[in-house]
Image 1 (cartoon, rainbow, N blue to C red):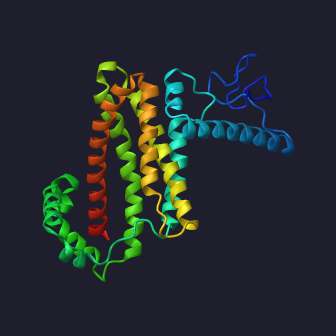
Image 2 (cartoon, rainbow, N blue to C red; image 1 turned 90 degrees about the vertical axis):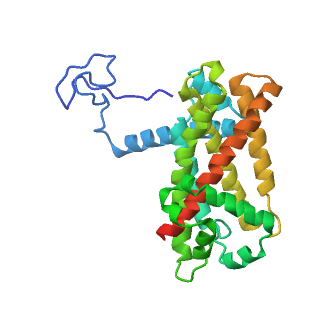
Image 3 (cartoon, helix red, strand yellow; image 1 turned 45 degrees about the vertical axis):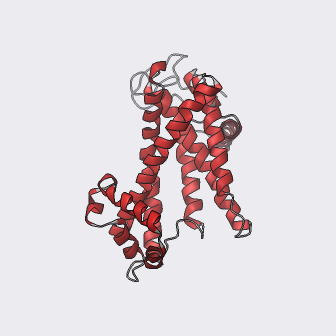
Length: 290
């Protein structure tokens, strides 16, 4: 929708004489739009702009949820004006997600029975814990002085403020996911390097994927407020995410179903490994800094 302007003949900021086509002053950049009008007109303009943005947002949200990869495809084709910009969409959805996560009573709870769990571990679990110890250097220099077992023991310490720990973990997750988003874009760039596409295209795909993931998990967390405790839809959420990602890759990268699957599987494994390391680092650093 084109903005209806009340154009001036002269720029009030620098005195430049406008031509009819000037929507902005070529000299100072100020908008050629007279705001010295009754409040009623300003309210009408605000409502007009808000309703137009709402229409754009709902169309964007519909495509994001039900048309995997379509927003990325339209961005690559240059069809962008009718949709919310990817970064703005990601910021809005992630804010809603982290707010829901923060108020969710069952999310991000720290197990305070770490010692009991360590005693109950079998040989295979202890071996897995040893392997996690070997990854300490990958999840931050601060963790190199403590093993994962020691961190678990520290997490159940009575001196540890569980509320502060929860808040710090959630805060760090937002930063962690913001860093993982360009990383996933770079992984796409590596896996699809033969297509010779620009990194920005892969980054836009990553932004839309993470936006969908956050939206889906927001719904999941909201459902946990109303569903019985024994009903857990986490596996369903993971399945939907996997199917969505596969279909989105199929649409955006225009490869056969088999080629897409052969790229999707190793790409997912690599990203999940990076996500695991980032989550372990987040918990470890949050415990150490609380």
